[in-house]
Length: 232
Length: 232
Image 1 (cartoon, rainbow over the protein chains, first blue to last red):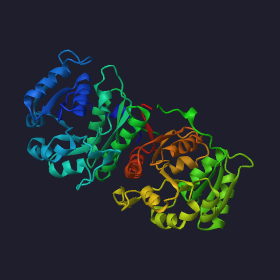
Image 2: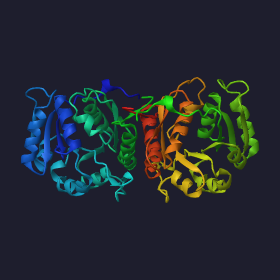
Image 3: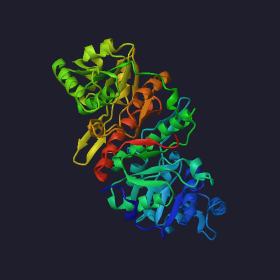
């Protein structure tokens, strides 16, 4: 089975919630999904900040007039969304996810959090007792359909309204093979992106950790690097 | 500093030794370097098997007549080469590298070994006390110039004489910034490849481990996947 975008399911009617939607990564993804015409809910601990962020995103270039972009508290966003992206900083990951287990039951959960530390030599991968951020989330969300994806997407590229296409592959790690099509379809809503199945959750650590390498590449080559899988 | 192949040093005069040159990965790399006109030494525990392998490689399509491809024991290959690629199976890595510390002193050492385990669910990354195979090698080779590179190159693609170009990026992890140009130049000897600096040795684990994800991708999409860094 080669990669074939034409077989992906129609996800245009799904509501996408972003937990941590006021941070750089979450906000950037929210913008791209809104620009694609997806209904987007921005989640934050502060419903007020979420609403303000939603208003700003709805007004950005390329977002269709009348686009449905709203903000609310994290719990309400989890409850109202079909697909929920976890885009909080790593140090708030466990607490945020644990508190949302009930509203996230039955939902598709996409974890894009990268557990990284930084010192004067730059970024490095943090050890995670569960193996990876997404495995930590999966352990806390036994009734959700969990995957890692969108770990490598550059926030500055997402945020730049001048950029139409973002050429990279979204690597999807999950135990739930049927989830792959949905998440790949969501990735494909952003022009230039493909969603590619990249292994089970036990192989997600290195995908999260690889963000440290992308940061090293960005620094050395003054780029906003992502990756493309070849021969696909 | 963007990626610029025109600034790479001339490495065409360097002798490239492959420790583990009779295995799939080593043999494939030896073939591609020989095909590019590089002098190649195949190393093996058995000098006889190495010589036989060298003879076979020299006779493969695309290798120039009169190409210098020879085989010898690992220690002799280490001593006679300018650049030495470590391409042994992970379970022989520590013993092989430790035994070569003296002949490898002052040499450029490229470790392309991926510490992976396999069970009925497929491949997974092994924990390495030193962090990664290349860190283990660097610890044992204090007088060598060590990097990780060529971890993601598909052995079947390397071996297929019909394939002219192998489109992927060789990610280079090292503490030795000047090494990057040499290894990138060596990568560029194989049409389609670029060598890209991808961080310090402490961020090599995830590059080695990512090979498990590439194997998952290969299985799912019937591909010989590699990766290309975007925006470079």
